[in-house]
Length: 257
Image (tube, rainbow, N blue to C red; front, side, top):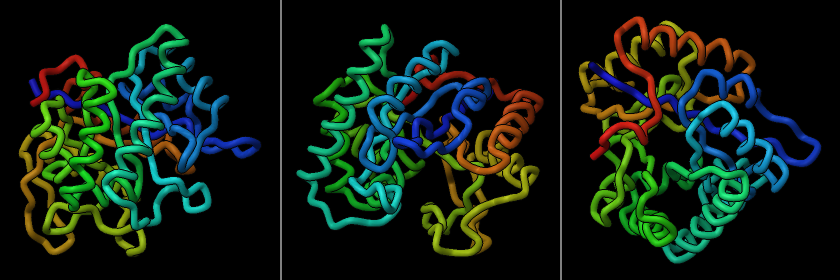
C-alpha cells in the first residue's frame, strides 16, 4: 500500500496577531511544523501549539526560519553556513524545550520559507542545517524538498530524511518550487491539487510549469494552514488520499531512507 505523511506549518501567530486555524487543522494532518520565534511564533504560541498537537496525537517538528518577522521568513538573506547552523540549533532547542516540558518527543525538523528554498539548491547551506539537526539529536528526521541538496545533505550525515512535496504549489523543470513572486506559484483548484499529490505518490512524477515531467519522491505532503479555506482544503486532500488507497500516517511510523 502507498503511504504518505500530511504536514502543516503551525504556531505562526505572534503576540496579539492570530494566524491560521491550528486547532482544527490538527484534526486532519499527521505531522506539524511549529514556528520557533524567528519568522513567526512566540514562546506562548509555541507552548500552546505543542500542547494542542500532543493532545491530538500529531507528531511535532521544529520549523526554524530566518530572523525576519516582517517578511515572515520568506525573503532571502545572505547568511553564512555557520550562521545557518547557529540559528537552526537555537530554534530546535527552543521548541524541544517546550516539547519535553509537555511530556512529548520531537519527530522532525523542517526549515521554513526562504531558508528551506535556499538550502534546496545550496550544498554548503544544506550541509550546515543537516549538521545542526544531527548535532542536536541524530534521531530527528530532516524534511526537505524532494530531490534537493537538503535531502542529500541529511542522508550524507546519517539522518533519516523525508522527501517533501507540495499540494498547492507549482514546480519548475529543475524540481524547485515556482517562486511565490510569480502569479502561477499557487494551485487554487483543490481537485487539481489532489490529482497532483496522488500522481506524485503513485507515479513519482509531477508536471512542471514548462510541461516536462519531473521525477519526485513523496514521503510527506505540505498542507498550508493559513489560507481562508485551509481547513476545508486539508480535509478534502485527506479524504481523496484515503479514497485513492494511500494510507495517511506520521512519517515517524515509516521506514524512510
